[in-house]
Image (cartoon, rainbow, N blue to C red; front, side):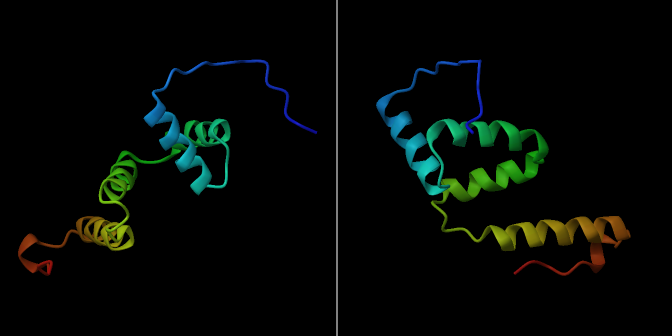
Length: 93
């Protein structure tokens, strides 16, 4: 049984924006409406840093390895939480 939605929201998009929205939705296996709903539901639970990392990865066309970026970020947080002195940290390659 389909979900009954009584609210309606109309969004004016350019042809390019609509095409991009449809491509993004298709990549996730969703239609445009479901894709926007998914974004609306997930964005409040995602940290600002994670959103910036995702946008950065998208800006590089997926050529950047986000797993390495996130791993480095989490390592830095662990070192900071452990109170490691700046002089004792390993330099990034």
